[in-house]
Length: 238
Image 1: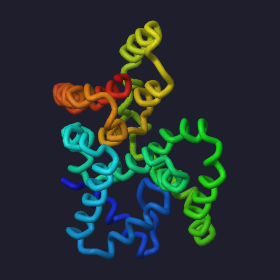
Image 2: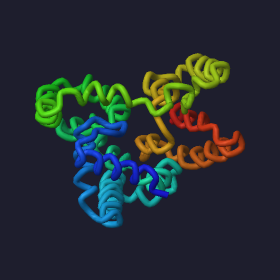
Image 3: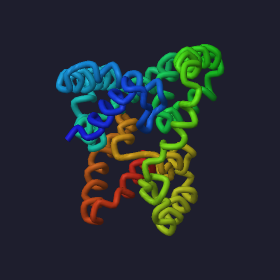
């Protein structure tokens, strides 16, 4: 339980020791370093408490229903940050989207917002520069260090996407395309190998069919010995 939270604390403690470890951009590790200054149980309460508060602020009364969505439960079980990322994406301000870049695979979801609204480009880039430029001036090598260890196996066969089973992927995608139900958004969700179970938290608040479907996908995963590809089906629904 809280496995990812332990990794965050470890990354934060390493940063205080002058070492950069972990899968996130260096500014994110700076936030983990602040958490690492606190007793672990206090840091966990802050992380989960802020995440749940933002989750409720995002979905309002619907939060009572969506809390049963499996990716959200997985998020809480692991001590992940996606509940905060959900608020950043839905808030959609230049500052919140800049903060979303701290988890790059989720920032990809914000690209359509940026494409549609060119008025926020300039303030978005300003906020992003304020977030990354100071720490890059202090340690310019961090970008190459991050790229060197950012792959935790999900690109080497540990894919969560339907690309693990190309025949099924072809059948599903061809069927959806034939019925004009396929969109670029659905392709991203279904075929993105960077996503984990908890990352599908970002679809919370959309069609409620995703809630029972998430449990069905979890059950299928269990029957397949833990193979996680069925979660990709959540990306094709709605």
